Length: 386
Ligand code: SF4
Image (cartoon, helix red, strand yellow):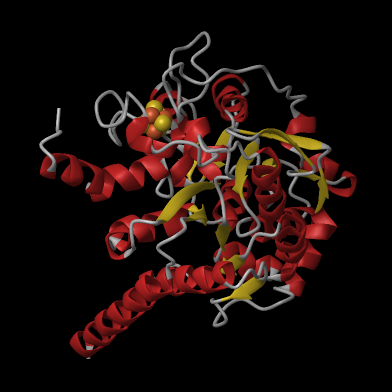
């Protein structure tokens, strides 16, 4: 059965690849941003680049929640764990992301753990709640990050903590909003050397859109005249989305289309949206690595859950920070440069010795380029490997 499925998928992929080649107008170029790191990894893992005509170029977007989190937010978590004697719970991706290099060298949560901080990797918010119940004498903080996909579970954890009267549990909230970031990219998008906009259309997020639906992208497509196709993470999903985008661009349309109909609806998951709006409120602004301060792009815990807000409970402040001087993560996240253009790529910065978050995260663009080796293979083929 598996063989038949693979054969069928391979034949379909060849068919879609041929359709893309037929659809691509040789007289123009197509620059498509895949917003999500999940799409970036699918493109590299399955070699989708190699199936595209030369004038169809994929551009990485900022859709990796670990990558866009600025260092000062990681510093807050490290400080909580090292200096406030809390049990800090976090998803595994965050553990190795370097914080600010000020004062302590490139400290990460993993290094803080090695120095004795009580930092625990969790798979779900319910794990953090369990730890809080098991340690009533200790403060337990859940370091919450992510787009709209991971926001509802954090909201549910806060509701449960309140309902169960957990007094030693709080959340360090760093949840951010996808459509606002997409709008920010288009608003601040630098033109390329020829003066053209760098982005012709978007492959829209998959998991995020299961929660928010396709509706929130509609004003973006209309206002900026950019087509958006929401796609799943399978290679065929990505290829089909590219074909749909080319068809829109060739016919002058700028619409939101949904390739991922098996999971995404127009209105999304209304129950999840209700839970989020009960627990969270918009921040006036939130700083993103690569995009800077973006108005109304992040969530805070609202006043009715104030006692569970780690920022208020521990009177946390946000300090100034600076990326490693040679790290190009900010430009990679805006789609302005490619990972291999960074001087540190594959030499100083590798998945074992990451300098920036794009090399750490399982959704990071640098990790995708490094892991699937296509850049190195291409360089090797041209005799250009150092
Ligand atoms: Fe940052 Fe490393 Fe990527 Fe360079 S290779 S942009 S240092 S993560």
